[in-house]
Length: 278
Picture 1: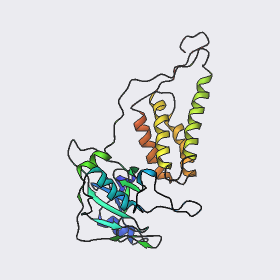
Picture 2: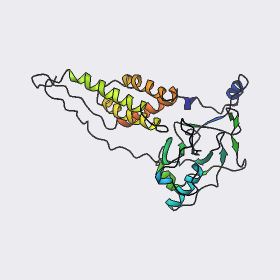
Picture 3: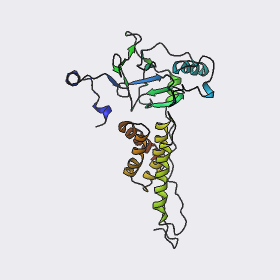
Picture 4: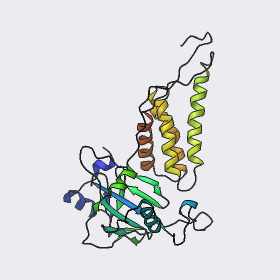
């Protein structure tokens, strides 16, 4: 059972947990039918300097995720949807709560990091948010208006956050030269090592994206029968934790990448020294 499936609103289970230790409140956004837009504050680099906006968002008055979101909406030609339930986070950011689209044709929206813009993340299926009035590291999450209700997610944001499916393709062979039977293992080992190194070398704020991309690439080989999924987890998990991701977060990201990679499988044909397939 996944952590999302273990999330509960059962008063008895919540009472049992809260009487055993000082817990806060976490909302599993996907099962709750929510999409939460996280407008963050810029974080200092290891030297203590505050990150400057990338060129795309380097305009006067752009200081944090809220400013970026207002500019994003302006560029899209839509009013900023501030009129919804919102909380001020412990780090000084803002969580905007929206109800996710429903119905048989509604897309399953998932968490994103920087997909919409700089300093803007989203939490949906696969994620959670800390709810007011919980505290994290002694800092409280505060509802801006306790009487407000989450508004429906605007259609243009739904479209922007809807995953673009990869086209389903026939397996794409990786052609090895005749006599390359012994090279198959070396090729796979190199592919796995390159993927893990890409995660380790990823920059601040890019770790999850790099992990997902590595899992997609190796997931194509898994789907083609060339690589066991367990080897992907064994290689990418240490790389993910080395850059600061939790095991739970890394497991979700790798699993998501493997599912995406499975849509474009790659096979690894092995040829003998005579050129006859082995």
